[in-house]
Length: 124
Image 1 (tube, rainbow, N blue to C red):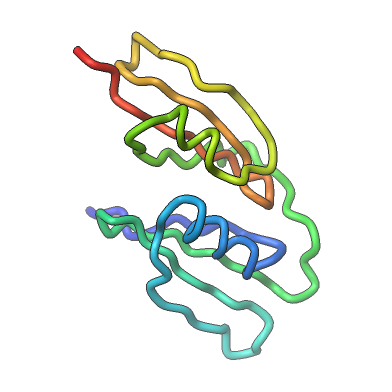
Image 2: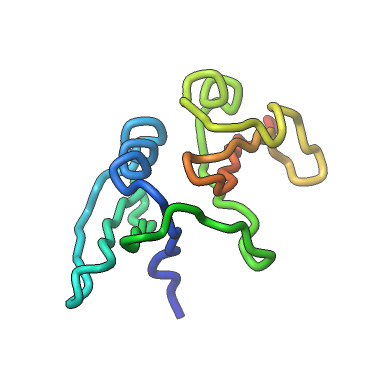
């Protein structure tokens, strides 16, 4: 079994695509609209090919956080640099070492409040 993608419901698809492509370096890969024209889906891919489906449904102006969704983790060369450079929409956790996980991490929110974790391996 392979992970194909994760779908994030968003309130402003252009803003979401811009965040993931310009701020996190993903590449927009493809898109489609539902037959009724109510939902637009745009996909962005990381360098390793893993995709995010960004889904905007007409009339949806708010995304409620659910208990089944926690965060999206992205690998970065420098957590501190990513934390400073990205135009995040809220700080969940500032950069800190997580020795038990062998990583330095930080958590920020995207434009719709989805939590994004930056992960940098700690030197051995």
